[in-house]
Length: 110
Image (tube, rainbow, N blue to C red; front, side, top):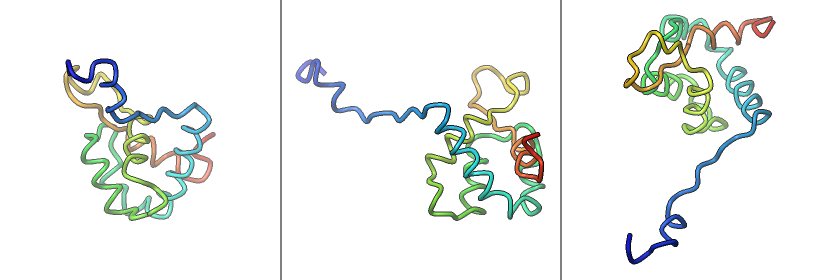
């Protein structure tokens, strides 16, 4: 750290922060990929508080869609965060899977 000084930050990977329009497009693309599998996923994603790692694992296994990268599944998970009242403050974020399933139904955005 002392040797690199100001150049230390250049060695860190950059974080991609999507603007609100791009976030919406990502969620919409994810919901379109999820929609054909919604009945099969109802038992796994039909709850309002899914641990982030479990959500990522379920979506990776079921979707198996090269158009949606694992990092994008994580981004969708964070954008679809479950209720904070259901998890302890020090716990990792949870995903509101039930809300995502409702959104990929016909008329789900209304």
